[in-house]
Image (cartoon, rainbow, N blue to C red; front, side):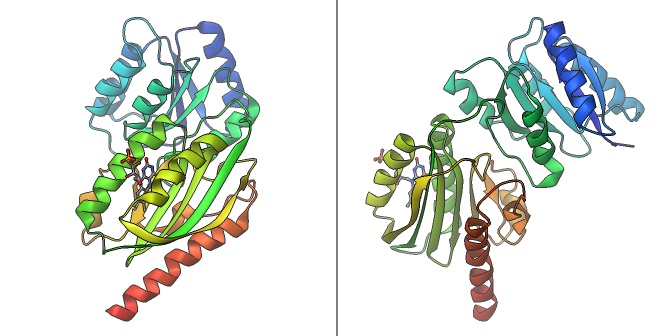
Length: 294
Ligand SMILES: Cc1cc2nc3c(=O)[nH]c(=O)nc-3n(C[C@H](O)[C@H](O)[C@H](O)COP(=O)(O)O)c2cc1C
């Protein structure tokens, strides 16, 4: 089946749908765009495309949330039951500013981004970077410039080694809170060494860090950076740690395998290559440590 560059725009407002289509066609070169007025129309079309093996299965879907007949949430449920041959990147494009909607969207494995209407040209550039094939799901809020964005990086050591189950529990606990508070970034854990980047509003970053710093599960917490930034480097909050069988963890939203370090690839359009170098060095130092330990 030919999966070359097809984008679905699922949007009930015909003017918004047309504007989005024009903007995408102008900027996503070589990508066809099809618009659907509600989730049901898109599911019907996808079902036909999957059963006939045509090239009408998209690699990218822009999804409105509030629609008649089948809304965005119902679409995501129906969509998750489709036998898709490869992952399809879904980006929520909505006028909802409700943080609960954002957190709820983060719980869907296919949802790679969440951003505000109307879509702007700068947003399309970010969409190109968010295509799932380029490096796994990311949950970014696009379309609206963020004010007073702050980041904080720290290093620490686990008080006692954390096993896979404890790390998975920490991932689930932290991810729910971080998603609901607009916090993105990454935590890397290896052999008891921890490095974490937190991005968000200054108040949210400081508040969560105060709690993290008090957590008895780790010690020797040392801040490496704490200041304003213009861009987020990560679209969601995730955790990377080595596990015996990575396949068991792939279903866990927010889990990244540090041996596949493409998620750290530096985007030249964004500043701060130093921070990427720092994170990449943590990964490479620790994988060398693992080799040395056999
Ligand atoms: C290394 C490490 C990183 C953590 N990162 C986060 C995080 O990013 N977000 C979060 O909500 N909790 C995180 N936690 C958990 C918090 O420290 C804390 O347990 C949790 O926020 C609940 O706080 P409370 O018990 O004061 O309510 C982390 C804990 C550790 C040990």
